[in-house]
Image (tube, rainbow, N blue to C red):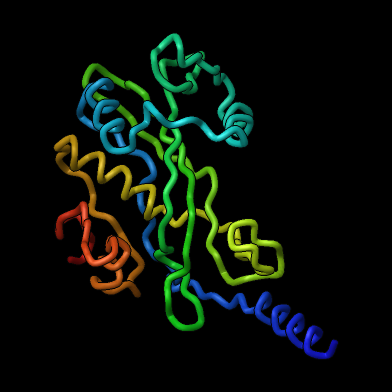
Length: 228
C-alpha cells in the first residue's frame, strides 16, 4: 500500500513539473500577420493550395462559431457546389478563409533544461482581392498551446496514467509571418520584410526547428531572416 501511495505521490510531483521560460526580451519587434501581394487572387489561391492543400482541408467546428461572431457576415458554402471541401465566405465581400494547422516547436518557450517546448497551432488564412492584381492574405491565430509538462490522467493511446499538460499561449507573430513569407517566396513577391526572431535565438536554434529527422528542410534564404 505504501508503495502505491509513493508511486502516486511521485506522479503528482511529475504533474507539477511545469517550469518554462520566455526567452524574449522587452521591446522585441513583432512580425506582420497580414500582407498584400502584387498578384491576382486566383494566382495566390493556387500557391496557397499547393503549399497547404487547402482544397482538402476542413474548417475546425469550434472555430466556425468564433469567426462567425468575431468577423460577422460569414456564410458556409457547400463543398458540392465548388467541387471541393467546404470553406467559409464573407457575405459582404468576396473574401474567403481557410484552416491551416501545424505541429511545431515553440520559438519562445523553453523548459528548465533549455529545450524548446512542443507546440501546436491552428491558423485561419483570410484571402481578399483588394485590386486587380493585389491580394491580401491575413493569418489569424485560432488555437495555440505549448506542452509544459505532464499531469495525471488516462492516456487512451499508451494506456498510461499521465497526459500532456498544455497551456494556451498568445501569438508570437513569428509563425504567422513565416506562413506569409513562405507564400511570398513561392509567388516571387518582391520587397517583403525579413522575419524577426527573438534576439536570444541563435542561427543554429532557428535551423533546428526545420530539421526532419536527419534532414534539413529550410524554406527560406539568409536574406529572409533579419540579422543574417
